[in-house]
Length: 143
Image (cartoon, rainbow, N blue to C red):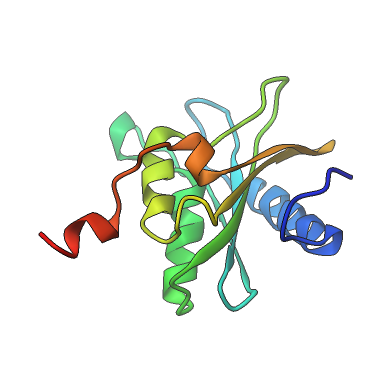
């Protein structure tokens, strides 16, 4: 198993299982690309989500968005880690919009983003590596 800073193997496996299970609930009749995500909050709880497509293409939403919505509804406010799962030979990462949504609930250097699939963990980064020089809530505090 790939070592991920700040997370033990058991927790990484829980995130992977939650994201893979969520992936099975995806509604993707157009792309046929199922995505599952699982967000670890500041209380150690895991919130899962899947992608949900819409015939009016820009109206669908990503698995990370669903998972963040579940986190907020459960009272979580800080994302500590996120696991994103998909299929295929390419390693999946959050899209640009999801990177910005994740930024709303985490400091970029603190959030661990993990890519996984049915074979296990494929790669990991910090949000800062995926979204350098990002704009976030701190920018608006002195506006």
